[in-house]
Length: 476
Ligand SMILES: Nc1ncnc2c1ncn2[C@@H]1O[C@H](COP(=O)(O)OP(=O)(O)OP(=O)(O)O)[C@@H](O)[C@H]1O
Ligand SMILES: [Mg+2]
Image 1 (tube, rainbow, N blue to C red):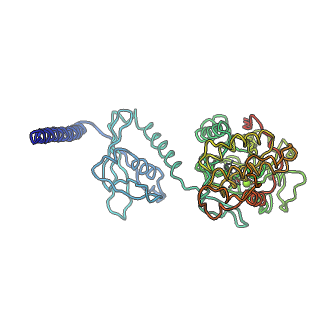
Image 2 (image 1 turned 90 degrees about the vertical axis):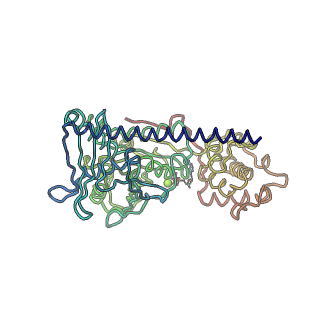
Image 3 (image 1 turned 60 degrees about the vertical axis):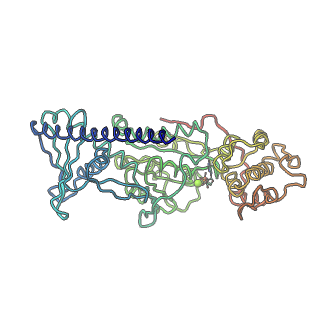
């Protein structure tokens, strides 16, 4: 036994010894490579390029900001001898930052580029010094600077904090945008969602394409469908996907056409301009009190001074588009029409998965049968029923079945409430009686009470969903 232990100890020590030697060698090799590079640099002609922080008119040099952003993102900074660590916008984020007078090496198209962060004193203007071999300069410099811009565009896009602007009589007022909806949390047909996502992503990359066609780089979307189907939530998700600020335009607060034009000109690039309940302003029997005219609205949609409206996405929401003059929604003015239907069985399953964490359930067949009869509810109604009963998926699904059975459209579809299989013999008892666990305070709402409450909140949505197989209507 003792011999065995001694053998194990000896073997482990030998292994550790070899490992140490190997690691030391690796470090030595990398040091040798470094020295070799330093020596070989001495034998080449270099060109030095300076990127100062300010220009001759004391204005900030945007290239300096971009180079700083770019260098701080480099992997070589992570591996360098000195690096400053800072926390980011989220306390858990850690950001790396160059040390004053630090030199880091970047490689591009086979060329070595050395950047020195030149800081004479904390109060004096800083600069970056780029050292590049003369023989590489002609070949590499232009594409390298372009590469820095592309990387920075990407970083800017990822780290932007989104803001929400609302219009007042004094112009736009801003607050941080904190809507929690994302493309993942909005329940909709998955193919449609993928199409919209790729449409947005394509738009983001299409600046040169639009310009080649002589078109202003902007895109507009119409989201239409009954109340509570997720239009506003989807707008929030779109803004996050694009990382664009949201300008929520309330036309009723706009005094006239020139005010509308002024507001549009005050929006900045990378923004989503939202007009909710657009039908209120463009139908013939429009009841709004504003003196904004239809032609003012059309100019707004077209982007009066188009070139000032680059890099914008416009989104209009409405419940139905049948009463709208097709000229208002013509391609070019509105590029993509997206229909938001009331729930069908697939929508219900999506919501059950998001709200209850349930992908399969014994009551699903019954829910499907109900949807097959043509009755339906909005995702908002179903979501709310699921949320208040989230501690018991069975109770939540029974509430949905009861709500479906008692919609006025259910009577039209010949659904008989008394035959409800989900209903216990004693009728629809309070959901508390059928809970599996203790439940939270709000989960005590009974099916019937819960349904009533939710109907009060969202109104009785009696309209049957006009389902479309192709609700993503691209008009370009
Ligand atoms: N498709 C959906 N997926 C997930 N949640 C949804 C969906 N539709 C609605 N909801 C939920 O219902 C609530 C209301 O949704 P939202 O305000 O986005 O609907 P809307 O279509 O804009 O309604 P309205 O036309 O009345 O303004 C939100 O809390 C949202 O989370
Ligand atoms: Mg809405």
